Length: 98
Image 1 (cartoon, rainbow, N blue to C red):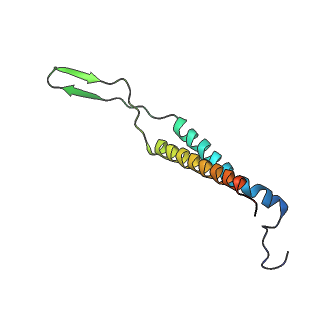
Image 2 (tube, rainbow, N blue to C red; image 1 turned 45 degrees about the vertical axis):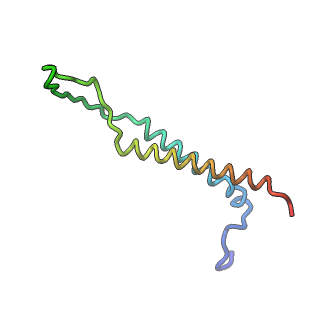
Image 3 (tube, helix red, strand yellow; image 1 turned 30 degrees about the horizontal axis):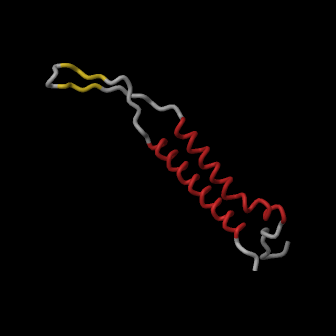
């Protein structure tokens, strides 16, 4: 390889380049699902209801933490990337040959 030459002309690299976007998007969706499905810390709480003279106790509450938010964001970005890539690929197939 000479100085200044790049590796973009290798046949293996060019073969995998069109699949780079869907592979990264699928990885983002899988990582987002793993972040959402991770076990969360449950908290309990109670509140005094002054008009009924009874204490209200919830069984469990799970708050959406930053890990779940990041998971939903990764899933959304992955699905948007997949939709863009699919539309782009379908658009390339439908272009008339000049």
